[in-house]
Image (cartoon, rainbow, N blue to C red; front, side, top):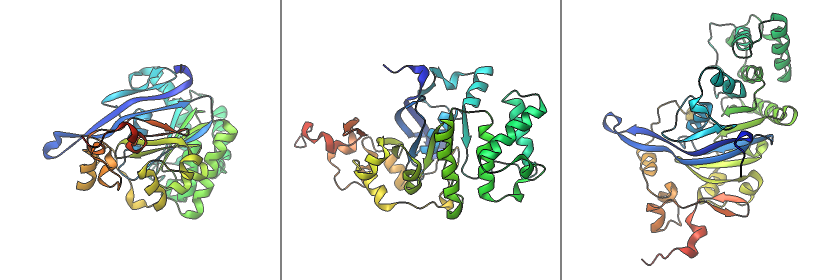
Length: 332
């Protein structure tokens, strides 16, 4: 039995969004997503999929800024969407986000160092200025910067890579257990990506941190990930150790995704909170069975109207009817 206090548990999470006239019709942006992350094992857990798959929506639900319509997220046994007051502040310290665009994370008219002082005072509860200075400088030095380097400066005085490192340092101020990284390198030049990825690896290895890394770029996922969850049109289709998933993808969508190896593209940025899928994407979201049936060359009749259960295949959890063929009578 899983002890709730040692886990981040995503239980049967479903999120609905409106479409059509006045948005009165609903589609499932996330459909019955469940994941368990052991808080006692430092790791980088990747959530991957195409733009519009629902992965950022899932991350924002874990963050607590979006509430699921069905299901819940438990952190150390607490339903995060029911936390109030000091309990909510505690969760904000434990789980910190890093966003895709570092320039949007900071007000261009506000000095960078003020964000750090506000975080140490309002979230960390540090009132002594010398103690705050020490904590801030320590966090900045972990990412290759210093308080002297950023003091009095504005966001435009830094490169995108520097700003992303500053974002990571600010998140480190609260000594979080989990870091939520939403496409943290997709806005950066290729020469800067490896540096940020190596920082994330250092966070896991040196600070024993858990990082939930959301991406559509499978090359970076493979470079830093320990396990991977593949999401397609709001459904979790495959989950397991990243080496096993990459070497032998079980779900047809995972196979297609790996064959394409999507490159990061800033033009594919997801916008929150609205999801505006194309007509083809929306059609796939509305399929009652496997969302990939419209594209899958192996799709059977049952694939269209019944979502398959999860099946364990050599330590990888996969949601595909082809592993249950022996239980299905296609003649009926």
